Image (tube, rainbow, N blue to C red; front, side, top):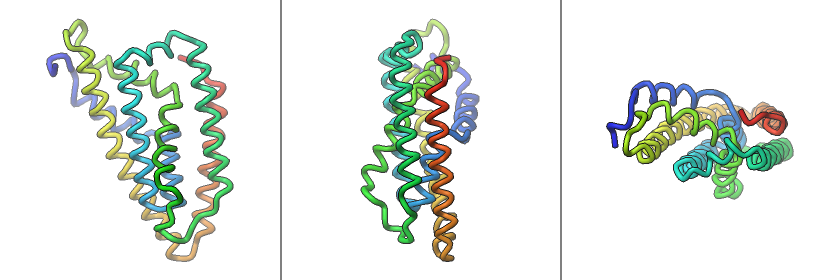
Length: 209
């Protein structure tokens, strides 16, 4: 199985850099940590990681390939994802920042919001289809297994990065709140919400490629 994988160090390095690139997932994690504390940020990061696992499984089963070949399937998932991003953004604009670091409203919902933020983004599915095969030896007998292993490795490393960012954002948030500067945290949350709405519109008008 490992004979089917090539360029593993490059894969790990590229994956870590890609996970540091700002996007809906990163913004969701930072927004949750900034408004509800470290625990919410970590839950959001774990939700994003779970969403990536779903994409890995769907790609291994060939379902994600449908998005690459079917314009209708891509458009449907794209509009669902765009609507969800806009809804999350509006939610961030409406809800105030709590001064209590333990006040994480419906912690389970934060996790599942992270899952949906990732799963409903068709660009993630296409990313796995385009990125992972570059590190699989052509013609190898265990390509599907190698794909799954690379997907799990990418998700594991990415989740570690996301958790670290959530903890850092949570620490910054607590500094603001401890100094009574909840207004700054509120504006940070609103800015993140506005960015989410913008990303939703961007996704809605994006092309499959």
